[in-house]
Length: 118
Image (cartoon, rainbow, N blue to C red; front, side, top):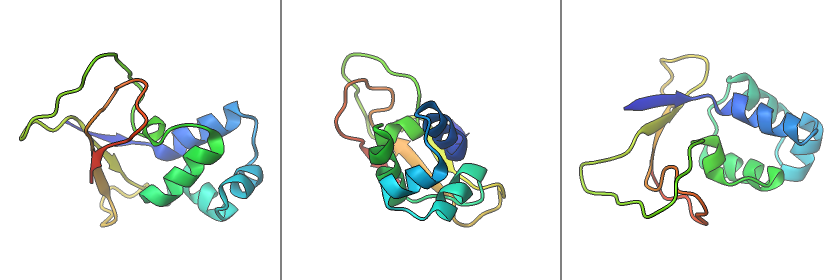
């Protein structure tokens, strides 16, 4: 299964819940405000580095941008049985800059690592 995640919408939702402007988030994350605006609008496909900076600035884990469901217990990953992949895409579906992330611990609560195959 392949799902397109709207990272920009999740970023906007989290930023607004914390009552931050894009300028304040830019200052906290040390990223340009125009980059944040492009991510939120879906015009830019972020790599892992800006997402990590944004996650730290907002106090959320990287996986918050990738999945919502959490469950307890161990997560087992077997060869050939990748979980749902997440595609980072801009507004254009035909973008050559799309990245597919396969979460290796999707939905695992309380994790302190974010293992992915990209």
